[in-house]
Image (cartoon, rainbow over all chains, first blue to last red; front, top):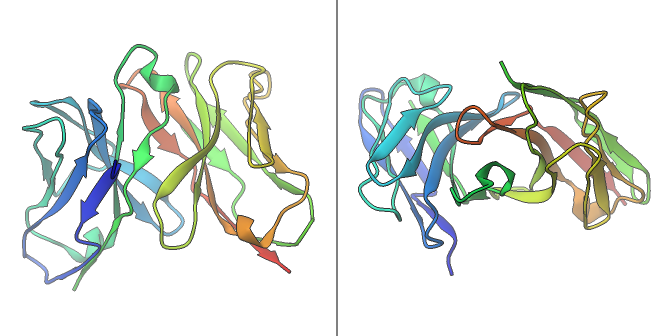
Length: 116
Length: 113
């Protein structure tokens, strides 16, 4: 049981480049989410999904795209990278069963992205 | 809207000292409250949680009580160890938005031997 996995661990992009951050979970969780972590800002929600084919925006969605074609995978796409997107990105998952708001989210190890 | 305010650090303590990290929240309804911990270079992991008023969450010597009257969920530990050095995040689940987590800004704790 690998839990939540993220690739790559580190990435450097030039302004304007695009890339996809990968996230996968093997716990059959319906809910998956992406956060970014910036110094002094805590974690802020980018996008989330409550099941295959269903996605929604979080607090800071601009410049990011997501899709959910399978229960296991939830990739995050940067369409045209900007220096303001330099951050650490975390993917997380949780059950969406009854009482879902009381359950913990399981986090991946993170991707550290630098945009120059 | 919903929000979480937690004491900003960094906090530096000697081993065996008492720890308190304050956390207050603003929310409609009755959210669940969480403390997550992030060790250096790692992702977040759940430390403890409480799902209703007056519940006490506890784990690894840490505890926090859900106080609805003061909208607080302060984290405490009676005797910290060097291995407790980490960043601690208070969070609530947004009942109106699929249980999305809203985090405080985090408190970095360093424990010296």
